[in-house]
Length: 201
Image 1: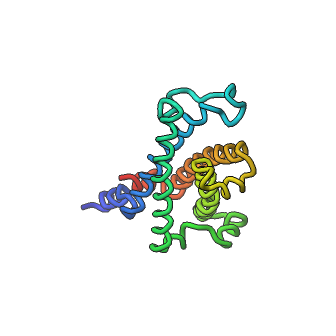
Image 2 (image 1 turned 60 degrees about the vertical axis):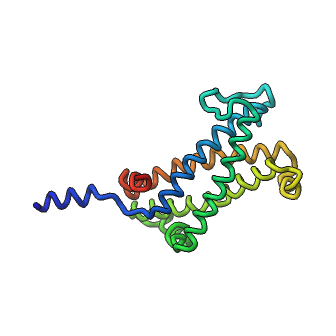
Image 3 (image 1 turned 45 degrees about the vertical axis):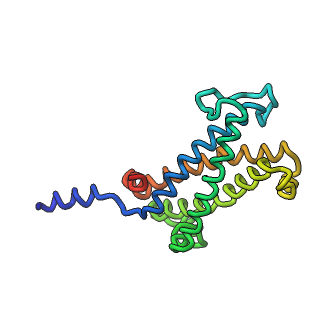
């Protein structure tokens, strides 16, 4: 085998990803898609901004067919999404992947002064990965408060009133979607399309 053939073979080889990490990412993306589309079905029944006369999302973005159907889908997938995130968090903790997944003080210094683009991309990746944690917790806690306002009344009270609760929960959605896009773009910069491809095949 020639040296050029060996080089091409190495280039074509995908980075190794643990099966567990792949499963968590697949479940997360599918459940997030179902959560968003069923959530928009609920939103259309009484838009957060503007009341019933407010702006509605088109039907092709909705899941559930009507309010009750949207709620059934949303609340069912909520448990899959939340439990998957919990399992992934435990996996990161046990496997010690947190040591290179979450940000630290050196990442801040790299972002501020380093001229190495690759190191900067890694630092930004860890910073964003860390910053999304409180947003995910806020999404889950506000969702639980709306799901069972009587049982979790102490939680609902923390959000002051129903409209504030709905607004906060709704705002977490574009933030999580934005994180997913930025996370993917940074992965492209750090490891090209091969890195993203390796996570799903």
